[in-house]
Length: 303
Image (cartoon, rainbow, N blue to C red; front, side, top):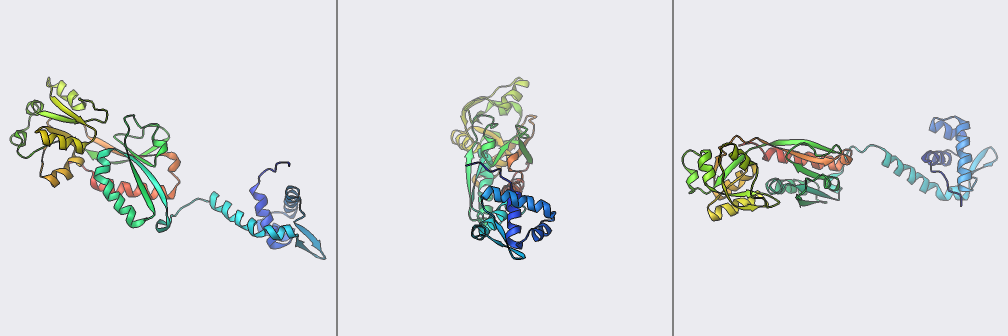
């Protein structure tokens, strides 16, 4: 069989010819000249091996094959128009989809429940898969998920980002810890025992570099992969943990913990929501990322 060059315009011409029953009527409907539609009919005849329309007196009538495929042609034209037309709205109650969110653990713990509750209320057919951040920089992973988070702008040119909010590191400790009372100086802070947050298990972070600038060093007794885990470890062994204020706030209120400003000149953390550019035109994805931005911005703010 000889392959046929695909031309969606032939489907539109065929639909018009079958509906109008004449070249002239089809040309008027398609805003084309009669010769142009005649040439399209000739191409359709060659492609199908069927006459499609044959003359009967002063009119033209469809062949049995044309009558048989009329409904299929109409359906294909409508589907092609839907595929090639911009999508502006999404039917949330009818939406069924699984979204992958690779978020920092603290962001999932802080905002995940709010996001899931809002999604369940508006689009009950949507399911969310919250994935933990890998130990890599996330450059390869972003194309495979729907939404990510980062402490800076999008990591690649193919990724887009939207700033969510600014966060500050704070010191969290038990109410009866010695550092909970009196002035918290860099020297007193460095003298305490610490639990740090590191997905890789590193026993140092940027705080140690800030202390080194002052000629100070601290004792780190453990590293934990998430801010929540670090807080729990620190409280159990009488240490302190330095975590973003957005993570510290909910736990401090829930468990009656003390929070102190970090006595170092630490830069603010700017959280970004990131996604691959291939999702830009997807209305369902746009709805989800706008919902996530709304919830995250309401929850994350500097102390």
